[in-house]
Amino acid sequence: MVSGSESLAGSSNKKYINKSKTGVKCLKSMQEQLNFLKVALRDRRIGAMTRSSKYVVNAVVRNFNNKSLQRVIEYGPGDGVVTREILKRMPRDGELSVVETNPKFIKILRNINDPRLKIIEGTAQRVSEELKRDNHAIVNLVISSIPFSILKPAERERIVDNTFKILEESGKFIVFQYSPILLNLLNKYFVRKKINTQFELRNIPPMFIMTAEK
Image (cartoon, rainbow, N blue to C red; front, side, top):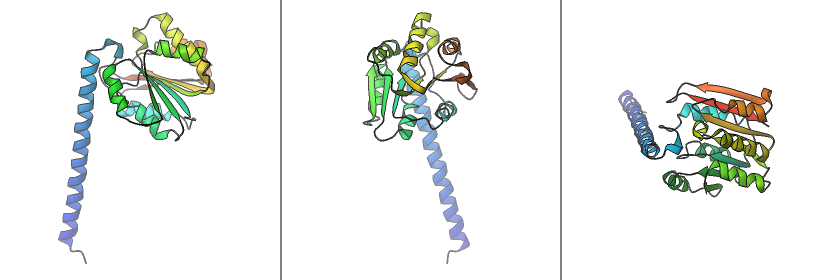
């Protein structure tokens, strides 16, 4: 029989362990944010000062809507905060191709060590063009966090055009960034009634999440 004092002690220990785990998790998150900031300050192409918050990541994932994740492409994965969530939901024989330009982020992505993950060093402009040329129109989902606002208008349109062509019918293009600048191009290439825009305040800065279905 367990005495009342033993029961209270056990409860206190559990609370202490839970608090310790929470503290460790917070410290890890702060360290990841700091590491991201250090890399971002040295590379203007990243276009972000902080990694996406858990609220943005959750919003992006909700837009999958049970979509097949057999073949997915991610432009600008950064340190892999969304990449890891895709892999959690991807079938064992799936393929996730991530397109990244920053060497430090590429090194972090390689540490994920998942056979389904294919890391491509290059720009979304070049890689999307190559995929279109090779007729890889079998992609279920394309996700992008690259800063379209710092690209030239012609470059933005080329990426959207190429992405539309490599997506399968009913395939999705999910874009999350600080500006809705890409919305006009999404309306040009995708059916308007299949375009959805969300605004997530719980991010620094707040984030637009735009989803377009082919």
